Length: 306
Image (cartoon, rainbow, N blue to C red; front, side, top):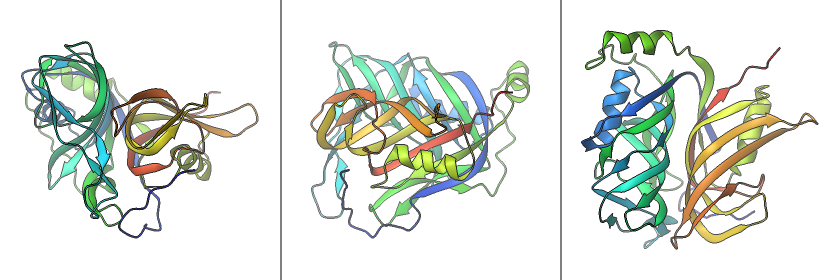
């Protein structure tokens, strides 16, 4: 398994986790505002400071993005590319989003795959303050209660990264712009479910980390909500290998199941972009895909059926 050498010393804990309650939602992000504004307004309506979710459909204009890149200085092992602007409207295929807090204000981390007006299908890291929602986008995921993904300095990577921290204060009870009918839908039709907010550190295989986490807690089945991260290249379960070692990805579908022999298996279907601009998709091979910088997600515990 490949690995990456970051400038700082690795911390002892490689998986930061908080037990949380998850409240499912399915809503439409409003258009004619930046992605950050659109998401923040929608999350305020849900009375949450933290969520993990996927986006589907809709579009952006104007639109720009960055990709993973080689580091230009010794301050980081890897970095981001220059910003790439895109001409014309962009149609979103799907994205994963981690929504939390930075310096006491809403912030998000998102990787996406989209179709450009030229016909090019591409993948990258969204710039939430710089792109505008031009057509409504469906957001489907979970509001996180009991912990908040919070941007914190990370001594190992020398980046500031989302880490799940236990919530100390209740979210604001204001629901500006939410109708009475929507309040009923939010409070009654979406019961809370048990789960965990996780951040996985570098050089830990993402599948193994999730399997071990579930095994230690007696979890036999879990669903991945959201899923934004990076890996040291990639190996897919069909044998394909992504050789460029700097990649960013999103989980299109993920779950941890118990197979016929009673063994836990993480099944993560992803889309990714490498630092050379190559887009790859498939199911990650278990035990062969170490985290590059970070990986954020929520695990929803699926209760056994009787």
